[in-house]
Image 1 (spheres, one colour):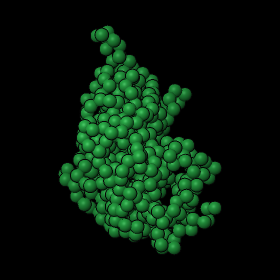
Image 2 (image 1 turned 120 degrees about the vertical axis):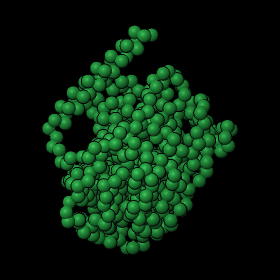
Image 3 (image 1 turned 180 degrees about the vertical axis):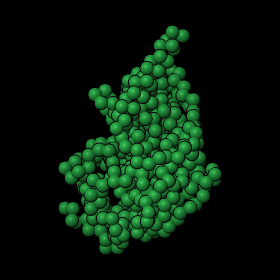
Image 4 (image 1 turned 30 degrees about the vertical axis):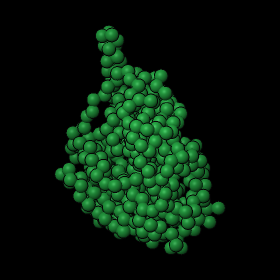
Length: 437
């Protein structure tokens, strides 16, 4: 047993060395656009690779109308992909069978990754559940079917002291669904960091649906060896099939009266791409009488007055912004820039009452620090900007009115630093969806 352990440690060391060499080679030619300030210390959780059928890294996501997908990992490869659930603690009236997968990354071998869809479920109801026939018991609350509904929003999380602070603050607010516009674990090729991230977010992600999109830190491809997004796609399965998409990198879902679209900044988006065709078809299906609010998320911001990551989304913006404008998109969330910024309604680089409000919220707590330098003077479309860690809360009150607030992690205390009331474009006469036919 001792010899096997030594061999395992040696293989991990070799894997880590190979990865560092590849990353250094790939990034050698990258131009440094700005100097990041010193980051906060990493928040470390012990990784326990022992054989076990006990569920780990449990998280849930929406999976179509009145259904939830429960995802978890076990070290025991024979553990069943079964979820037992009910509305009373310890009493499981229902049972669902799911699927499992696993992946390899150089010398790393993932545990068995389970995905099980349960339902139909009652709206706005607490359910108790356990995975694989094993304790412990978890619980979650389903979103409401009618207004009001509240979303917690935070991108670029990582695994630092700031991350823990952000998660603690989110845990204090009353929300129904978490939205994350890319850059989850910051594993950056070191696969065990996906495992520790799963442990870190489990208390929140097992209790409310987490709807996520990919960021650049999910691109862990090694040319000719490992496909990009293999870790992300294996661990964080989203309802792409339920929304008519062919890729886990872009999809949509409905919550109460809100239609939310998650787009991929790092997959093809030109007018001949599958993503573009899917987006166009998805927007044409939106019934604003049923879902009067239209919210969009992706990783790289289209409107950004920070010096960091300037111009990276210009091509995507030129291709897809006209579609969102024609559909009357209300709010667009992005991450990537490690700071906070909110715009007025804007389109084609200018304030426009029929354009979307763009919010950059890549300030969840990543290991790289904040992007503090902003362009001067401040653009006319930019209303509020600040380089601090934090999270946001979007409370949709009814079909026409919502409240947005951004909460700064100021000395580990939740501070409401920016707040605004938002009126939906429904009934404004702005939507011209017919131009896409």
